[in-house]
Image (cartoon, rainbow, N blue to C red; front, side):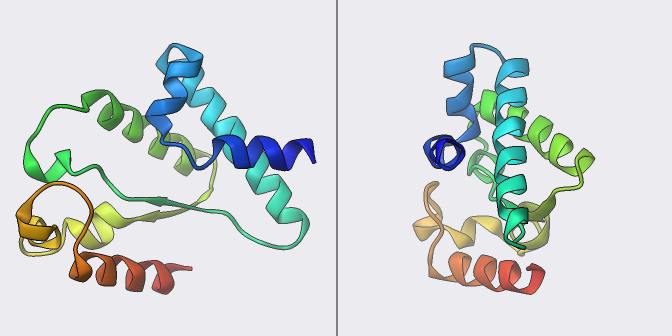
Amino acid sequence: TETRNYISDYLPFNFALVKYKYHNETNALQEYMKILSIAQSEVKKWGGKVYFVYLPHTNHYFGKNKYLYSLRLSQKLIKKIKENNMNFIDLKQGVIDIYPNPKDLYPLQIPGHLNEKGYELISKYILKNL
């Protein structure tokens, strides 16, 4: 249906990418929340739940300032998700920030995808919080 196509077309994309279509932070945030609201309504119809899982950008741990826009927007998005009582799993606070050296969760301590240990920890945390 039209609603399902709308959700599948937009929801998987990074929040920062939505900004390029809607030209400013306010519109991007409103559009992303609209998409999440539609997803939540659709899933609720069949008795399911939508979870927003926040995996922070590596800039948080490697001190690079390349994506400050997405860091700023992610905080605004998280605030909106909490204000709207959406299910929220915070991998930053629940896993990565409490690990003794978060850089050890990345291969060769290089920014990018998590390593095997990183994915193991976040998958266990997600399962525990569903």
